[in-house]
Amino acid sequence: MATEIHAVRRDTAASATGRPAMPGLLALAVLLLVLIAAPYVLYPVFVMKVLCFALFACAFNLLIGFAGLLSFGHAAFFGGAAYITAHTVKVWGLPPELGILLGTAFSATLGLAFGALAIRRQGIYFAMITLALSQMVFFMALQLKFTGGEDGIQAVPRGHLFGVIDLSQSMSMYYTVLAVFLFGFVVIWRTVHSPFGQVLKAIRENEPRAISLGYRTDHYKLMAFVLSAALAGLAGGTKAIVFQLATLTDVQWQMSGAVVLMTLLGGIGTLFGPVVGAALVVTLENYLAASNLPVPVVIGVIFVACVLLFRRGIVGEIAARFGEKRP
Amino acid sequence: MSTIFGIPPQALFGQLLLGLINGSFYALLSLGLAVIFGMLNVINFAHGALYMLGAFVAWLLLTTAGVGYWWALLLAPLVVGAFGVLLEKTLLSRLYKLDHLYGLLLTFGLALIVEGIFRHFYGVSGQPYPIPDLLRGGQNLGFMFLPNYRGWVVVASLVVCLATWYAIERTKLGAYLRAATENPVLVQAFGINVPLMITATYGFGVALAGLAGVLAAPIYQVSPLMGSNLIIVVFAVVVIGGMGSILGAVLTGYGLGLLEGLTKVFYPEASNIVVFVIMAVVLLIKPAGLFGRER
Image 1 (tube, rainbow over the protein chains, first blue to last red):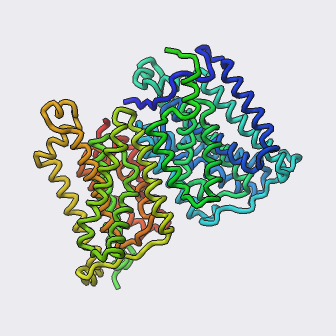
Image 2 (image 1 turned 90 degrees about the vertical axis):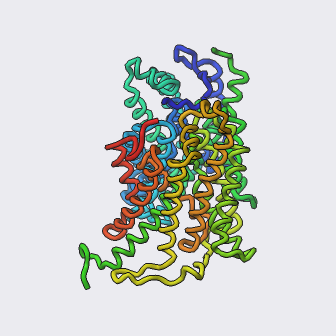
Image 3 (image 1 turned 135 degrees about the vertical axis):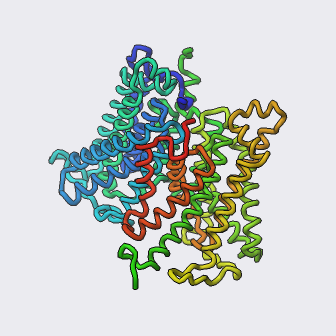
């Protein structure tokens, strides 16, 4: 039985030929301008946090939105990479770019292992398996020596990018994070609009039919899983450098839930949705941290409201209202 | 002092008993999950939160109204069950026509809300719940010491699991239920109120979680976090057992609890992850689960 999350059944930014259409490129240009200007208006560290989570959510969305796979264990890739990056930079003294690369590679490998297990089951089971596997990573982070248990790895040096750019300067750090985010975003954009992405969508819509057309759907799903895990790792490793720490918070299942919410709120299956969702959730958490309201309750209420009333998400709604209708 | 595999028997049996206790909770919770999933096609992510709610209702009954353990054993599941009925009627029932994943997402949100509220008011530290007078003390079995209350938990959960199995597999109501999971439209055409059955099933399933919470209260501390980590292990149990059979869910629950206990004896570092490792192995060998059938 193929699961089909009711994604927006039209590409917000692509014509049938796979060439990005005007609205998509326009949105990208606007996003770029906003992000280049953002640190002059907002607190740079806050925007960096948004960017890391936006990339994380985009990576997660690649699975749910374009392959119909709900992973409830993406914290393992995000947090796992954060630990690897933090450790290699702090203890081995590697430069930040290599640390992030190793974190990403670790998450890709982990994604290969988890994906191979999880794609053996469909739908709800898939979600439960990814959740359980990620919990294993959580316990390892809790118990292994190098992760520092409850304290995590703290005081990770930001170092110098390529040996020249001093990342302790917040502006140079910011534009590095922006570059990483854009790289990830473009990779996802290209993937979605490639023949590979088209096959993923076919699997999302009707897996048995994709199989009957001769596609090895398991290979495609696994590839998507590895790519998504790697990008989630890229986000996690970058976050470890920005905040100079890796903690259990990043590998907890609540983090997996948070990324699901970001994507759902912004719009599953849209390219820009996860970015908007991540920005909103991070802003909300910052805002709530200063207030007396319990964060999980508010997050939970938004979750319930999204599922019941607002399944397309913000960007999904906009696209459905203003986009050209296509049968 | 004789030893078994180099382990003193006291320690070995003590850990096995602990494993059996954990297994009792795994069994009760995965049973509830299986019953709910069979009828609603929803994986109830809020199950852990409702187990916690059961424990808290018992604790609140004791501390605010002075209602003792035995009444709590009856009242707390009823309260949790009623809450479940309310949830199903107002929220879950809107999602049956959609993808199953939305049910998972919705109940995840509910779990966050319920746990968040209790965390807000009671913090993360646990509240002690006294063992009822009747079950204080223990039995010396010669090779080990068995605390009465722990023995009671194992027996009680076994009785509840078997009774549930009997009700579903051997009674007329259970036959309706099984028929409705197979083909709700047809059963409805025979004049059986399927929506009511769905609501009742959800209520019953979460009442089981509430009951587990009351049983757990004197053993573990009553804390807002008691359900959130347990539910993930129970999910793994469900994946290992498969959703195919009620008995499968129960057996897998007890078996994995015992296995966890054994791991604590021989290789304590891995006791937290052994269930997940077994899940991975089972997925490699038998993707549908030990008792499952692909649906």
